[in-house]
Image (cartoon, rainbow, N blue to C red):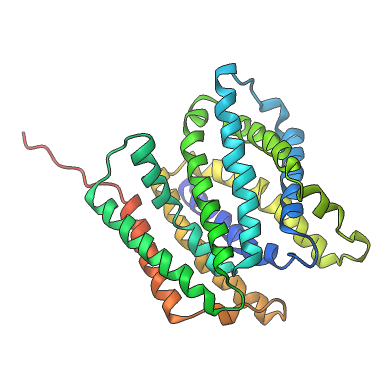
Length: 305
């Protein structure tokens, strides 16, 4: 098997894990654990694992870069993660997955204003299509018992925060090893999440004695499977594939989330199938179209000698 094919398989597994996470994590909230306590558990577990496994590969950070590291921790872990799980608890897995695909659109908008990058006409058209479709998609979520506007807003804030993180972390990734950046970002993020008054208190409220084996396995999947495994596979894939190819895989997350919704339904677990509708499907298609126009690279103009 070629390295090229292995890289694509790695990317598929990453998005497969993310797609499953929408259903797995939601099934634990809020009856087993609150969203804030869940994030504290996930971030503390991931931070511990990063330091234990990768401590010999972690570099020292220059004093001039600590402000950016802290900013990445704020937007990449604290705001991002807290909003995601608080949103996921209040909306459906498919809603969350579709809204998250707007991240490239938000990155483009922020890059235009903050980094003064030029926006091409197809990209502008993609932003308009994606934004309008996302608004209709979220507004239509009110008709479902699994989707609320407040939950969708949390996911939008999460996507916005993650977009800021992607812009801020770019210079750090070019200067340091990815594991160095992610370890320090998670470490500071853990400190900030711990300051949030609901985090540790919700974690302490978990009745571990009555927690089932299935719930424990779900916790392990979210803490380890959705953090350490995707990181390792993503680094492997990025070394062999271009960022544009990697970004296209974001389209798979809503489809895979929908797939796991039906898998859990057939297994007699949570049932979110009533959340599907033709309107949401059409809106999702337009969102995908908008994202495609945003991330599609421009055609190279051939020079005539």
